[in-house]
Image (cartoon, rainbow, N blue to C red; front, side, top):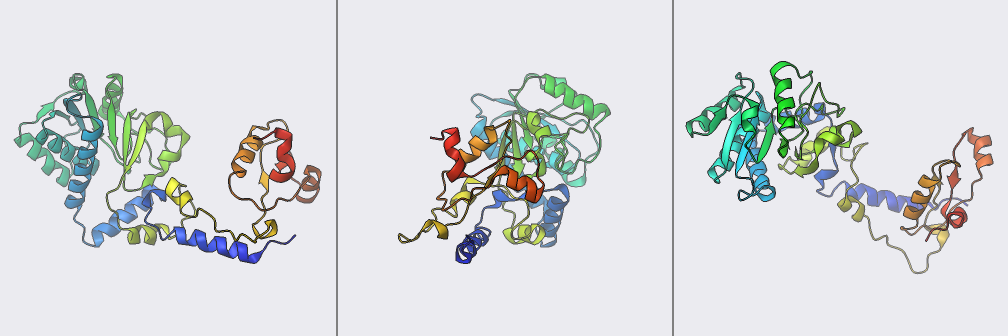
Length: 331
């Protein structure tokens, strides 16, 4: 039975319409892509200082929701030399103005110009600057702003010791964008890495958040929308990127499927699941359960020996929902 072209053309149109929805949480970026998006934003006239203020303010407000002053009165701030450190200093300033007791640790004295300006200002406010990471032991929570998404070298010496010391404190750690020390693309620790309790990812999800190697470092994750223009995102990543994240809103955007009351199964598409193996049937069972949810019209019955002969595929067990599911007693 040949597939009905009208059905597939209709589905393709629905899928293409998804990209027009303002769901930026579906995008996934590498370091290079994120840097290109930021470069185009700055080239369009967005001041870097304004973006840093925006990011720091959003993080500070979210921090107050999750870590209220009544329970987390004293907050330690780890400040790196780059713009991630500048974000952390804005957070420090805003939390200080809201009544938190703030202590700042800066392991590397040489800061970039914009971050240095924020550092001089928090010093003028009388916010405590500590000499060692161990001096943050009395804090109720720590904000990690050592490194952002541009880390590309192994962490050594004083920075290595700082991260190791902070991890040993046993205090909740909230990382800005990524836990310091995690490579944005691979998710691997670059010598060592902060083990965050909570990570606020800025703007767009980074590849590291989908890497198994980063799981033990990320803690709870949350995307902070910093209002990156969708037009620039799509200019860099494309309207329909090859790789994207399936979100709840994205899945719901094409549901429910419109179906005529006079239609029949041959007009509703075919389903074939290629899953698991004869020895391990768990994947087949789970896929079968999932495949029962959408309105499948018709499924072909493929036999394994036919597949082996025609496609020379070995050790693949093919299950079709309508003809095989009874063998697994699916509810």
